[in-house]
Image (cartoon, rainbow, N blue to C red):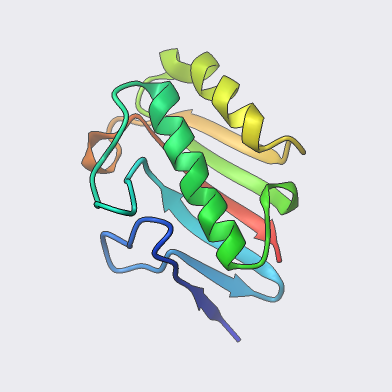
Length: 124
């Protein structure tokens, strides 16, 4: 049975998808971008600020699902510029302290022209 996750503490979906789905004790969270859930606006002018907001949004989804950062198994990280890799990692490491498996790639363009997007798979 699939259980949809939805919280107003993370950005609403901007397309035909759910914020996250729980299946067999696992959370599959949609990618988060630096949208302030309170006003729906992109916030942060640099990779550090945007990564902070992305990680906070992920935290809200994890909490809604009954999970937390320590239960994240895998992340997929998307950067607009691989030149931001070190600064992104500095913020990311504060949140993902258990060092889950990870992919990190640079992509041509991200939704709303943000600098980063992160999706997670976590145990619930």
